[in-house]
Amino acid sequence: MRVVTGTLLAGIAASAAFAGAAQAQGLSPDYTAAFEARVANPNNTSILGTFIDIAVREGQYDQALSTTEQHLIAHPRDAKARLIAGRLYNHLGSYELARRQVNHALEIGTLSSEETKQAQDLLRRIERALSGWTGSIAVTGGVRSEWIDFSDGSDRDDVSPFGRISGTLRQDLKNATRDAIIYSGVIEGTRRFFDVDLSSTTGEQDHFRGRAAITWDKGLPDSGIDSLRMLLSGYVRGESFDSDTDETEYGGSLRFTARPTVDSFVYAGVSYGWLDGSQSVLADERFNWEAGFSHRLTGTLSAGVAVKGSQDYDSGDKIGEATQVEASIGGVVYSIPGRLVWTHKLGVAFGERESPDLSLGLPAMVNTDFWQISSQHDFQLSEKQYISFGLTYTETDYDNGTALDRDTLEAVLSYTHIFN
Image 1 (cartoon, rainbow, N blue to C red):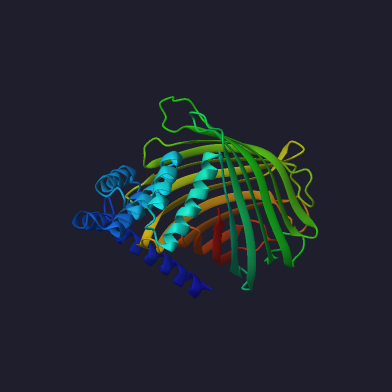
Image 2 (image 1 turned 135 degrees about the vertical axis):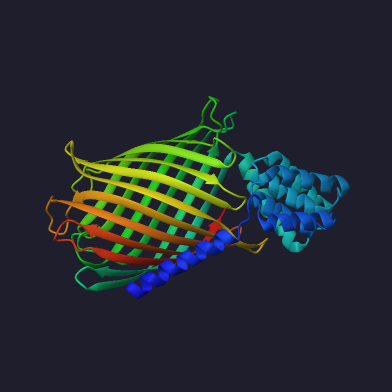
Protein backbone atom coordinates (compact mmCIF):
# COMPACT_ATOMS: atom_id res chain seq x y z
CA MET A 1 0.00 0.00 0.00
CA ARG A 2 2.85 2.42 0.85
CA VAL A 3 4.36 1.83 -2.61
CA VAL A 4 0.95 2.39 -4.23
CA THR A 5 0.50 5.59 -2.22
CA GLY A 6 3.91 6.90 -3.27
CA THR A 7 3.13 6.14 -6.89
CA LEU A 8 -0.23 7.92 -6.57
CA LEU A 9 1.28 11.08 -5.11
CA ALA A 10 4.05 11.13 -7.71
CA GLY A 11 1.50 10.65 -10.48
CA ILE A 12 -0.71 13.45 -9.17
CA ALA A 13 2.27 15.79 -8.91
CA ALA A 14 3.39 14.97 -12.45
CA SER A 15 -0.14 15.47 -13.77
CA ALA A 16 -0.43 18.83 -12.01
CA ALA A 17 2.94 19.93 -13.40
CA PHE A 18 1.86 18.91 -16.89
CA ALA A 19 -1.44 20.80 -16.55
CA GLY A 20 0.37 23.87 -15.26
CA ALA A 21 2.98 23.81 -18.02
CA ALA A 22 0.22 23.56 -20.61
CA GLN A 23 -1.29 26.88 -19.55
CA ALA A 24 0.06 30.22 -20.76
CA GLN A 25 -0.47 33.46 -18.94
CA GLY A 26 -3.71 35.03 -20.11
CA LEU A 27 -5.29 33.15 -22.99
CA SER A 28 -4.23 29.62 -23.81
CA PRO A 29 -2.12 28.54 -26.80
CA ASP A 30 -5.25 26.79 -28.17
CA TYR A 31 -7.11 30.09 -28.28
CA THR A 32 -4.18 31.88 -29.92
CA ALA A 33 -3.79 29.15 -32.54
CA ALA A 34 -7.54 29.08 -33.26
CA PHE A 35 -7.65 32.87 -33.59
CA GLU A 36 -4.68 32.90 -35.98
CA ALA A 37 -6.27 30.12 -38.06
CA ARG A 38 -9.51 32.08 -38.16
CA VAL A 39 -7.71 35.24 -39.39
CA ALA A 40 -5.83 33.24 -42.03
CA ASN A 41 -8.99 31.45 -43.24
CA PRO A 42 -11.89 33.91 -42.80
CA ASN A 43 -14.25 31.97 -45.08
CA ASN A 44 -13.72 28.51 -43.55
CA THR A 45 -16.80 27.62 -41.47
CA SER A 46 -15.15 24.60 -39.80
CA ILE A 47 -12.32 26.81 -38.54
CA LEU A 48 -14.94 29.34 -37.40
CA GLY A 49 -16.70 26.61 -35.38
CA THR A 50 -13.43 25.53 -33.77
CA PHE A 51 -12.64 29.10 -32.78
CA ILE A 52 -16.13 29.67 -31.34
CA ASP A 53 -15.90 26.45 -29.27
CA ILE A 54 -12.54 27.48 -27.78
CA ALA A 55 -13.62 31.11 -27.24
CA VAL A 56 -16.72 30.00 -25.32
CA ARG A 57 -14.69 27.52 -23.28
CA GLU A 58 -12.34 30.32 -22.23
CA GLY A 59 -15.09 32.84 -21.51
CA GLN A 60 -14.37 35.08 -24.51
CA TYR A 61 -18.07 35.52 -25.32
CA ASP A 62 -17.78 39.02 -26.82
CA GLN A 63 -15.13 37.81 -29.25
CA ALA A 64 -17.17 34.75 -30.14
CA LEU A 65 -20.28 36.85 -30.82
CA SER A 66 -18.54 39.53 -32.87
CA THR A 67 -16.66 36.94 -34.95
CA THR A 68 -19.85 35.03 -35.71
CA GLU A 69 -21.80 38.15 -36.62
CA GLN A 70 -19.01 39.41 -38.91
CA HIS A 71 -18.96 36.07 -40.72
CA LEU A 72 -22.73 36.09 -41.20
CA ILE A 73 -22.66 39.62 -42.64
CA ALA A 74 -20.23 38.41 -45.31
CA HIS A 75 -21.87 34.98 -45.73
CA PRO A 76 -25.58 35.30 -44.87
CA ARG A 77 -26.51 31.94 -46.45
CA ASP A 78 -23.88 29.89 -44.64
CA ALA A 79 -26.21 27.41 -42.92
CA LYS A 80 -23.47 25.82 -40.82
CA ALA A 81 -22.45 29.24 -39.50
CA ARG A 82 -26.11 29.94 -38.68
CA LEU A 83 -26.19 26.70 -36.67
CA ILE A 84 -22.99 27.70 -34.86
CA ALA A 85 -24.59 31.06 -34.03
CA GLY A 86 -27.69 29.28 -32.74
CA ARG A 87 -25.60 27.16 -30.38
CA LEU A 88 -23.76 30.24 -29.17
CA TYR A 89 -26.92 32.25 -28.47
CA ASN A 90 -28.51 29.25 -26.76
CA HIS A 91 -25.43 28.91 -24.52
CA LEU A 92 -25.74 32.58 -23.57
CA GLY A 93 -29.47 32.29 -22.84
CA SER A 94 -30.59 34.45 -25.79
CA TYR A 95 -33.22 31.94 -26.86
CA GLU A 96 -35.17 34.12 -29.32
CA LEU A 97 -31.98 34.89 -31.28
CA ALA A 98 -30.96 31.23 -31.05
CA ARG A 99 -34.31 30.07 -32.48
CA ARG A 100 -34.07 32.60 -35.32
CA GLN A 101 -30.58 31.43 -36.31
CA VAL A 102 -31.40 27.70 -36.17
CA ASN A 103 -34.62 28.13 -38.15
CA HIS A 104 -32.71 30.13 -40.77
CA ALA A 105 -30.07 27.38 -40.96
CA LEU A 106 -32.77 24.75 -41.60
CA GLU A 107 -34.53 26.93 -44.17
CA ILE A 108 -31.35 27.40 -46.22
CA GLY A 109 -31.31 23.62 -46.67
CA THR A 110 -27.58 22.97 -47.10
CA LEU A 111 -26.92 21.27 -43.76
CA SER A 112 -25.75 17.67 -43.83
CA SER A 113 -28.08 14.99 -42.44
CA GLU A 114 -26.10 14.90 -39.17
CA GLU A 115 -26.10 18.70 -38.90
CA THR A 116 -29.85 18.77 -39.62
CA LYS A 117 -30.44 16.29 -36.78
CA GLN A 118 -28.30 18.44 -34.46
CA ALA A 119 -30.22 21.57 -35.48
CA GLN A 120 -33.60 19.91 -34.87
CA ASP A 121 -32.48 18.66 -31.45
CA LEU A 122 -31.18 22.13 -30.54
CA LEU A 123 -34.41 23.73 -31.74
CA ARG A 124 -36.46 21.45 -29.47
CA ARG A 125 -34.34 22.47 -26.47
CA ILE A 126 -34.66 26.15 -27.39
CA GLU A 127 -38.45 25.84 -27.63
CA ARG A 128 -38.56 24.25 -24.17
CA ALA A 129 -36.41 27.07 -22.81
CA LEU A 130 -38.73 29.66 -24.37
CA SER A 131 -41.71 27.94 -22.74
CA GLY A 132 -40.02 28.53 -19.40
CA TRP A 133 -39.07 24.91 -18.69
CA THR A 134 -35.67 23.27 -19.14
CA GLY A 135 -34.32 20.07 -17.69
CA SER A 136 -31.96 17.16 -17.98
CA ILE A 137 -31.43 13.65 -16.63
CA ALA A 138 -27.95 12.20 -16.12
CA VAL A 139 -27.40 8.45 -15.85
CA THR A 140 -24.07 7.29 -14.43
CA GLY A 141 -22.58 3.84 -14.01
CA GLY A 142 -19.16 2.92 -12.72
CA VAL A 143 -16.88 1.08 -10.33
CA ARG A 144 -15.50 2.26 -6.99
CA SER A 145 -12.38 0.55 -5.60
CA GLU A 146 -11.02 1.14 -2.10
CA TRP A 147 -7.84 -0.06 -0.40
CA ILE A 148 -7.48 0.50 3.36
CA ASP A 149 -4.35 0.06 5.51
CA PHE A 150 -5.00 -0.07 9.25
CA SER A 151 -2.44 0.86 11.91
CA ASP A 152 -2.37 -2.71 13.25
CA GLY A 153 -0.91 -3.94 9.94
CA SER A 154 -4.13 -5.37 8.52
CA ASP A 155 -5.71 -4.20 5.29
CA ARG A 156 -9.00 -4.37 3.49
CA ASP A 157 -9.98 -4.14 -0.18
CA ASP A 158 -13.38 -3.29 -1.60
CA VAL A 159 -14.51 -3.21 -5.24
CA SER A 160 -18.09 -2.03 -5.77
CA PRO A 161 -20.06 -1.27 -8.94
CA PHE A 162 -22.51 1.60 -8.54
CA GLY A 163 -25.25 3.36 -10.44
CA ARG A 164 -26.68 6.87 -10.13
CA ILE A 165 -29.54 8.81 -11.70
CA SER A 166 -29.86 12.56 -11.23
CA GLY A 167 -32.26 15.05 -12.73
CA THR A 168 -32.98 18.77 -12.78
CA LEU A 169 -36.07 20.64 -13.95
CA ARG A 170 -35.94 24.45 -14.07
CA GLN A 171 -38.97 26.70 -14.33
CA ASP A 172 -38.04 30.19 -15.51
CA LEU A 173 -40.27 32.78 -13.83
CA LYS A 174 -39.54 35.22 -16.68
CA ASN A 175 -38.83 38.39 -14.73
CA ALA A 176 -36.05 40.96 -14.87
CA THR A 177 -33.85 39.19 -12.29
CA ARG A 178 -34.21 35.81 -14.07
CA ASP A 179 -35.75 34.09 -11.04
CA ALA A 180 -36.50 30.40 -11.29
CA ILE A 181 -37.87 27.43 -9.40
CA ILE A 182 -35.52 24.42 -9.62
CA TYR A 183 -36.67 20.86 -8.93
CA SER A 184 -33.82 18.39 -8.47
CA GLY A 185 -33.22 14.84 -7.34
CA VAL A 186 -30.57 12.12 -7.23
CA ILE A 187 -30.49 8.47 -6.19
CA GLU A 188 -27.47 6.17 -6.04
CA GLY A 189 -27.08 2.51 -5.18
CA THR A 190 -24.13 0.20 -4.61
CA ARG A 191 -23.01 -2.78 -2.54
CA ARG A 192 -19.90 -2.04 -0.52
CA PHE A 193 -18.02 -2.74 2.68
CA PHE A 194 -18.56 -0.51 5.71
CA ASP A 195 -16.04 -0.17 8.53
CA VAL A 196 -17.04 -1.08 12.06
CA ASP A 197 -16.76 2.53 13.23
CA LEU A 198 -19.01 3.76 10.41
CA SER A 199 -21.78 1.19 10.75
CA SER A 200 -23.31 -0.98 13.45
CA THR A 201 -22.96 -4.06 11.24
CA THR A 202 -19.73 -5.12 9.52
CA GLY A 203 -19.33 -6.71 6.09
CA GLU A 204 -20.72 -5.88 2.67
CA GLN A 205 -24.02 -4.08 2.70
CA ASP A 206 -26.48 -2.69 0.15
CA HIS A 207 -26.01 1.05 0.30
CA PHE A 208 -28.56 3.49 -1.09
CA ARG A 209 -28.69 7.25 -0.84
CA GLY A 210 -30.89 9.89 -2.38
CA ARG A 211 -31.90 13.52 -2.18
CA ALA A 212 -34.79 15.58 -3.54
CA ALA A 213 -35.05 19.37 -3.34
CA ILE A 214 -37.01 22.36 -4.53
CA THR A 215 -35.10 25.63 -4.79
CA TRP A 216 -36.11 29.24 -5.34
CA ASP A 217 -33.29 30.87 -7.31
CA LYS A 218 -33.80 34.58 -6.73
CA GLY A 219 -31.81 37.45 -8.25
CA LEU A 220 -31.34 40.25 -5.71
CA PRO A 221 -31.51 43.99 -6.45
CA ASP A 222 -28.29 45.69 -7.47
CA SER A 223 -26.42 46.61 -4.29
CA GLY A 224 -22.94 47.11 -5.71
CA ILE A 225 -22.29 43.36 -5.89
CA ASP A 226 -22.47 41.90 -9.38
CA SER A 227 -24.88 39.00 -9.98
CA LEU A 228 -25.91 38.61 -6.34
CA ARG A 229 -28.38 35.74 -6.00
CA MET A 230 -30.18 33.93 -3.20
CA LEU A 231 -31.04 30.23 -3.30
CA LEU A 232 -33.66 29.10 -0.77
CA SER A 233 -34.22 25.33 -0.70
CA GLY A 234 -36.28 22.69 1.02
CA TYR A 235 -35.02 19.13 0.83
CA VAL A 236 -35.35 15.55 1.98
CA ARG A 237 -32.33 13.27 2.12
CA GLY A 238 -31.95 9.57 2.92
CA GLU A 239 -29.05 7.15 3.29
CA SER A 240 -29.06 3.48 4.30
CA PHE A 241 -25.87 1.80 5.56
CA ASP A 242 -27.26 -1.63 6.49
CA SER A 243 -30.41 -3.29 7.79
CA ASP A 244 -29.94 -1.65 11.22
CA THR A 245 -28.77 1.85 10.27
CA ASP A 246 -30.37 4.50 8.11
CA GLU A 247 -30.33 8.28 8.13
CA THR A 248 -33.35 10.33 7.10
CA GLU A 249 -33.15 14.11 7.04
CA TYR A 250 -35.70 16.81 6.31
CA GLY A 251 -34.40 20.34 6.09
CA GLY A 252 -33.90 23.68 4.46
CA SER A 253 -30.94 25.71 3.24
CA LEU A 254 -30.10 29.31 2.39
CA ARG A 255 -27.25 30.16 0.04
CA PHE A 256 -25.94 33.40 -1.44
CA THR A 257 -23.77 33.57 -4.57
CA ALA A 258 -22.10 36.47 -6.34
CA ARG A 259 -19.62 37.28 -9.08
CA PRO A 260 -17.46 40.23 -7.91
CA THR A 261 -15.73 40.11 -11.32
CA VAL A 262 -16.31 38.21 -14.52
CA ASP A 263 -13.56 35.76 -13.50
CA SER A 264 -14.46 35.24 -9.84
CA PHE A 265 -17.25 33.51 -7.91
CA VAL A 266 -18.05 33.57 -4.20
CA TYR A 267 -20.69 31.76 -2.12
CA ALA A 268 -21.81 31.25 1.47
CA GLY A 269 -24.65 29.25 2.94
CA VAL A 270 -26.24 27.50 5.91
CA SER A 271 -28.64 24.59 6.27
CA TYR A 272 -30.66 22.91 8.99
CA GLY A 273 -31.78 19.28 9.00
CA TRP A 274 -34.11 17.27 11.24
CA LEU A 275 -32.99 13.63 11.66
CA ASP A 276 -35.34 12.35 14.36
CA GLY A 277 -36.85 9.77 11.98
CA SER A 278 -33.51 7.99 11.47
CA GLN A 279 -32.60 4.54 12.78
CA SER A 280 -29.46 3.90 14.91
CA VAL A 281 -28.43 7.56 14.51
CA LEU A 282 -27.91 9.45 17.78
CA ALA A 283 -28.41 12.99 16.43
CA ASP A 284 -31.87 14.43 15.90
CA GLU A 285 -30.75 17.80 14.45
CA ARG A 286 -27.90 18.92 12.16
CA PHE A 287 -26.61 22.37 11.29
CA ASN A 288 -24.26 22.89 8.30
CA TRP A 289 -22.40 25.95 7.02
CA GLU A 290 -20.11 26.61 4.04
CA ALA A 291 -18.26 29.40 2.25
CA GLY A 292 -15.96 29.46 -0.75
CA PHE A 293 -14.26 31.49 -3.44
CA SER A 294 -12.92 30.64 -6.90
CA HIS A 295 -11.06 32.66 -9.50
CA ARG A 296 -10.12 32.03 -13.11
CA LEU A 297 -6.36 32.55 -13.34
CA THR A 298 -6.10 32.13 -17.11
CA GLY A 299 -8.45 31.24 -19.92
CA THR A 300 -8.52 27.57 -18.88
CA LEU A 301 -7.11 27.45 -15.33
CA SER A 302 -9.05 28.17 -12.13
CA ALA A 303 -8.29 27.95 -8.40
CA GLY A 304 -10.58 27.87 -5.40
CA VAL A 305 -10.71 27.63 -1.61
CA ALA A 306 -13.59 26.61 0.65
CA VAL A 307 -14.41 25.97 4.30
CA LYS A 308 -17.35 24.01 5.64
CA GLY A 309 -18.56 22.52 8.87
CA SER A 310 -21.40 20.77 10.66
CA GLN A 311 -22.76 20.35 14.17
CA ASP A 312 -24.98 17.51 15.42
CA TYR A 313 -27.42 17.86 18.31
CA ASP A 314 -29.45 15.42 20.40
CA SER A 315 -32.29 16.88 22.50
CA GLY A 316 -30.63 20.29 22.25
CA ASP A 317 -27.17 19.11 23.35
CA LYS A 318 -24.28 19.18 20.88
CA ILE A 319 -22.92 15.65 20.38
CA GLY A 320 -20.67 16.11 17.35
CA GLU A 321 -19.07 18.59 15.03
CA ALA A 322 -16.78 18.66 12.00
CA THR A 323 -14.75 21.31 10.17
CA GLN A 324 -12.93 21.06 6.84
CA VAL A 325 -10.75 23.38 4.76
CA GLU A 326 -10.08 22.58 1.11
CA ALA A 327 -8.27 24.08 -1.86
CA SER A 328 -8.23 23.13 -5.52
CA ILE A 329 -6.75 24.08 -8.87
CA GLY A 330 -7.69 22.77 -12.27
CA GLY A 331 -8.61 23.41 -15.86
CA VAL A 332 -8.38 22.09 -19.39
CA VAL A 333 -5.41 19.81 -20.03
CA TYR A 334 -6.08 18.95 -23.67
CA SER A 335 -8.90 19.35 -26.17
CA ILE A 336 -9.92 18.40 -29.68
CA PRO A 337 -12.77 20.78 -30.62
CA GLY A 338 -15.99 18.89 -31.17
CA ARG A 339 -14.48 15.58 -30.03
CA LEU A 340 -12.78 15.71 -26.64
CA VAL A 341 -12.23 18.05 -23.70
CA TRP A 342 -9.95 16.68 -20.96
CA THR A 343 -10.07 18.57 -17.69
CA HIS A 344 -8.13 17.90 -14.50
CA LYS A 345 -8.70 19.11 -10.94
CA LEU A 346 -6.23 18.68 -8.09
CA GLY A 347 -7.50 19.18 -4.55
CA VAL A 348 -6.25 19.03 -0.96
CA ALA A 349 -8.31 19.05 2.23
CA PHE A 350 -7.69 19.08 5.97
CA GLY A 351 -10.23 18.57 8.71
CA GLU A 352 -11.19 17.39 12.14
CA ARG A 353 -14.28 15.70 13.45
CA GLU A 354 -15.73 14.89 16.84
CA SER A 355 -18.48 12.30 16.73
CA PRO A 356 -20.05 9.46 18.74
CA ASP A 357 -18.25 6.12 18.55
CA LEU A 358 -20.71 3.73 16.88
CA SER A 359 -18.32 0.76 16.88
CA LEU A 360 -19.51 -0.22 20.38
CA GLY A 361 -22.95 1.32 20.07
CA LEU A 362 -22.12 3.80 22.84
CA PRO A 363 -22.24 7.62 22.76
CA ALA A 364 -18.54 8.00 23.68
CA MET A 365 -16.93 10.83 21.70
CA VAL A 366 -14.10 10.24 19.23
CA ASN A 367 -11.78 12.97 17.93
CA THR A 368 -10.57 12.46 14.36
CA ASP A 369 -8.02 14.37 12.28
CA PHE A 370 -7.55 13.77 8.58
CA TRP A 371 -5.89 15.12 5.47
CA GLN A 372 -6.73 14.27 1.90
CA ILE A 373 -5.43 14.74 -1.64
CA SER A 374 -7.53 14.09 -4.72
CA SER A 375 -7.08 14.04 -8.48
CA GLN A 376 -10.13 14.20 -10.73
CA HIS A 377 -10.03 13.74 -14.52
CA ASP A 378 -13.07 14.29 -16.74
CA PHE A 379 -13.11 13.39 -20.43
CA GLN A 380 -16.05 15.02 -22.24
CA LEU A 381 -16.64 13.00 -25.39
CA SER A 382 -19.63 15.01 -26.60
CA GLU A 383 -22.19 17.44 -25.30
CA LYS A 384 -24.00 14.54 -23.62
CA GLN A 385 -21.30 12.01 -22.74
CA TYR A 386 -18.28 12.03 -20.48
CA ILE A 387 -15.99 9.63 -18.62
CA SER A 388 -14.61 10.45 -15.16
CA PHE A 389 -11.68 8.98 -13.26
CA GLY A 390 -10.81 10.06 -9.73
CA LEU A 391 -8.18 9.11 -7.16
CA THR A 392 -8.41 10.10 -3.49
CA TYR A 393 -5.84 9.36 -0.78
CA THR A 394 -6.81 9.97 2.86
CA GLU A 395 -4.93 9.59 6.15
CA THR A 396 -7.17 9.40 9.23
CA ASP A 397 -6.00 9.50 12.85
CA TYR A 398 -8.25 8.64 15.82
CA ASP A 399 -7.68 9.38 19.50
CA ASN A 400 -9.80 6.42 20.60
CA GLY A 401 -8.27 2.99 21.08
CA THR A 402 -11.33 1.20 19.69
CA ALA A 403 -10.86 2.82 16.27
CA LEU A 404 -7.76 2.12 14.18
CA ASP A 405 -5.82 4.83 12.32
CA ARG A 406 -5.87 4.20 8.61
CA ASP A 407 -4.64 5.16 5.14
CA THR A 408 -7.21 4.90 2.37
CA LEU A 409 -6.85 4.98 -1.40
CA GLU A 410 -10.04 5.20 -3.42
CA ALA A 411 -10.40 5.05 -7.20
CA VAL A 412 -13.65 5.77 -9.04
CA LEU A 413 -14.22 5.20 -12.76
CA SER A 414 -17.58 6.17 -14.26
CA TYR A 415 -19.45 6.92 -17.48
CA THR A 416 -22.27 9.47 -17.68
CA HIS A 417 -24.87 10.07 -20.37
CA ILE A 418 -27.04 13.18 -20.24
CA PHE A 419 -30.57 13.31 -21.66
CA ASN A 420 -32.13 16.75 -22.23
